[in-house]
Length: 148
Image (cartoon, rainbow, N blue to C red; front, side):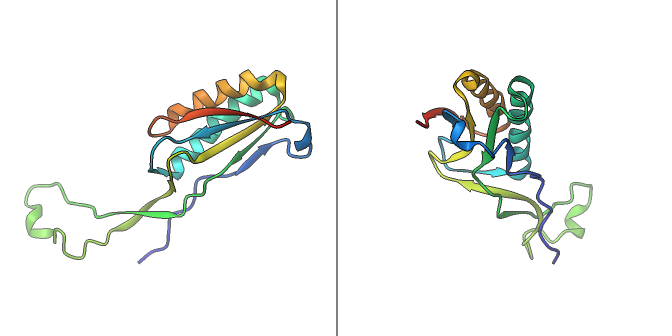
């Protein structure tokens, strides 16, 4: 049995974290249903949001943080789909499967990602998270929380 696959998420925090008290709003990405999200979907969501924010606000105009970690191991019992495969394959016997991917289990209403911004960059943060929602399964929602 081999180990788990390498996690694809490179950073869990990005932006400027040295001036957290200067930010006015936190924009959160919330999930509306119970599900599992693969590490590839989490990484593509993070990349989409951060790329949009860096273009509009610059490196020091925001601070983003992923709030979930993919710790669940997804396994797959591969089946042969060729002619005469029924003689070669064992079906569901010893069907433990190989580790294929990692996923994070999220509950209903759980925050996946949050971005802290100043008042002038609030609309840019909303737009960035709206574009990042496309990369996730289900229908996430965006919530704005004032910090002061």
